[in-house]
Image (cartoon, rainbow, N blue to C red; front, side, top):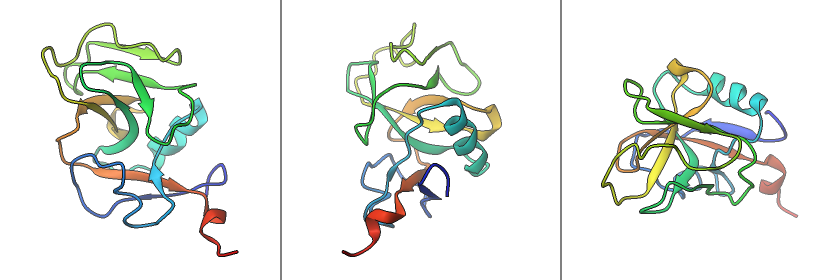
Length: 143
């Protein structure tokens, strides 16, 4: 439990799917990050292999939004993969300075990669990773 949320990692690696967390816990969403402390916690909680976060961009766009509709008030995203990080943007919500995958028309997703420390890396949504999930345990209680 951190910041009134319970966290878990989905059991199987899969392509990015906003509903993957809800298949394990009905009220769970793919994790969003809103402060440096959230960033440190989530990266510390994540397993050794990369996991999906809920930050995605629309096709033909490098403007990212959180899948849970929370504000884009904090984040650090590295453009490109772990070996070829070309640029980054942080906090402001503006796009990366360079397109990490020129000519790519697909939606871009982000992963937490504990080996790199805090921050996210943008990757193609068709790659296979587990999902980092969070939910408020109070929403799962029956009235």
